[in-house]
Length: 423
Image (cartoon, rainbow, N blue to C red):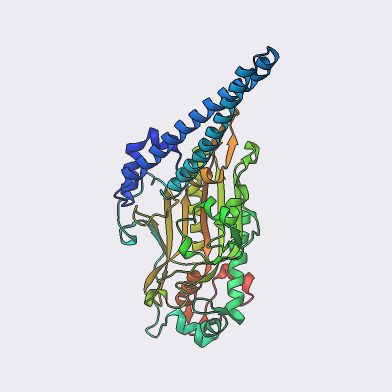
């Protein structure tokens, strides 16, 4: 959530940033926030003045009664009663304005970092690096959805029977490979200094608002109406919310957490060849890394997190490319995001497997996540997160890229985890 003070100081810059996101009425959105804030301040000032006046009058009543000035005392009591009624109205108005201001800010996305390129969609994202060559497969090579059916390692029909489309059942060596990837990712994160946490996979509304999934992604989240709870779309939500309403001790920074959870996304309206097989699911496993940093450190940290993801992909022997997301494809809460895509040879296409983002103070302002600097001043921290990694498309690429006459070859780094070399 943007700070009103920042909007007032950087209004023209913020308008340009929102226009980079293709928001045409950026100035109208920001002016509405400024107007609400002005009305809030005016109402607060009037309420404070009235409260002070009521306090002074109340003090005078006793002195008037003691001096025998009963009529004046009664008049003062009447003034106090009138002010009490007026102050109740002002308090209600102030609460209403504060809520309207908060909702207006909730609906304005983060301001893109200056390096974010212009663009309308994922087709305009900027490729900034490519590592590895796509494997050359035999002419008989297949897409993963055919291979997994032949090998009987992932069953979509059973998932449909139990739940519905987008909820596959992993079986035998497919389940073992999935678990091996999770353990490998967690071990690598631990080596890099991340502390493992196992958070809930259901969160309350406050947590959804805290990291910005609400109200922006409400339609994509599975909702449990009876308790007003949500299945998490990513471990970023519960892990970052560990620090909601927290003033962090400076000695405890940086905060580095890693967590493995299932993730749930409705992905309403998704269809077509690009969502076949493991390409897009309603439930999938993901290992997420989250950092909380001082503002001056966050962009170096973003590069470190990207290097961590690169290291995983290199060890898995997967060709990959890195994209800097354009304004039109940038997530609602992000200031800068790098996507990692692996090449899936059986489909002949790139598949996104990780997004690494810096949210600057956007989430921290919603979360009230701060620390005290050397001057005891309260400072908003920066939050960052990244998939390290999301499993379904990693599985798809591993299965397709490593298909041989002997079976699906398991990368060397995973063999201690799987206990087998081939499927």
